[in-house]
Amino acid sequence: MERLIPLEMLNHSNSLLKSSRNKGTAYNCPLIFLFVKGMNVMRYKYSKEGLKILSGNLFKGLEDRPMSHAANILELSNGDILTVWYAGAYETSPDEAIIISKLKRDTSNWDEPRIVVDTPGKADGNPVLFEYDGEVYLFYVTIEGGGLSEDIGSNYPEAIRTNKSLRGGWDTCPIKYKISKDFGETFEEEKVFRKEWGWMIRNKLLKLSNGEILFPIYDEVNWKAIFGISKDLKDWEFTGYITTPKGCIQPAVVELESGHLLCFLRTRDGYIYKSDSYDYGRTWSKTEPTILKNPDSGIDLIKLRDKRLLVVFNDSFDRRTPLNIGISSDNGKTWKLWSLETDEGEYSYPSVIQSSNGLIHLVYTYKRETIKHLILSID
Image 1 (cartoon, one colour):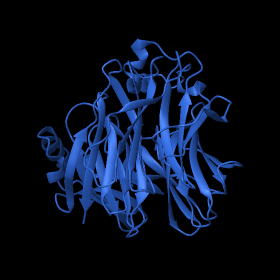
Image 2: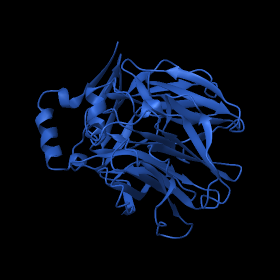
Image 3: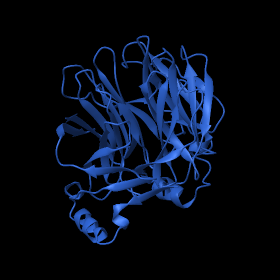
């Protein structure tokens, strides 16, 4: 029998943990969680050493679209870095548009953010970038079902927590895309990836060792993870349809070794769940919980050049703070964690890459007001 046993449930440690968190110094506390399977114990702990934040900035917001969310970041083959996100009056508002900004190679300042997708009277969201054969693909969704009221959309995380059958928003989206042939300077006309409503996107596409491309997708209606597999971004095979006891979305995938894929899942179950594939994503193992908490919020996972795994997530059962970054040297069995944000507010939906110079670039939602970008190094 498997059980997740957080040390904060053990006697005497609970008060110490709460005291440390109230002072905003959770990383000073050797917070350890135990994962018990028979006599095998896995753990994770916070650390103060090894993480360096080299720089950080807040993107300039659009005055007429005060809410920003769901950034996605990509390094291009020419060395430039693109970031996209959506902004509007509130989540699912009819003025919600896709914003783009570029950090040119060997520069330190991002270009002025600009609107790249704005469907009249409808909310555009969840942009995802991918480069293939010199062309930049911008995938996104558009709400066709009317959107949600401002009362609901202005506090969307709480709304979906209390009403899991909420309809008329992201469950009514087709998936679309545009292509740029000049590294994101201009984009061609909109095309439709999937016309039927219900499927959504969030995390990055993955080029596999066999040359195929894996597209993490999810079913917003039935809360299942789906994986698109293609050789050319034209013809697709869809696999997976995996879920967890209470439902999962927004899969994040890495290739541990040739053909062996590891998927982390956002869930309603209190923890990040995982699933493995040993045939390049054709079949997937039964989902099971990791030791990492999840408050039903976005996550990201990448494999570094040195083969360690890096995860960014909210170390909480019910809040989108703190925002944490973790490193694993054993394919996710144990984790060393750092806190990036610990204040009140929302710090969520991370998107992370390791750039060609070895540095970590991370973007995430900052209080729903803007997007924050950090450059980090990790020993």
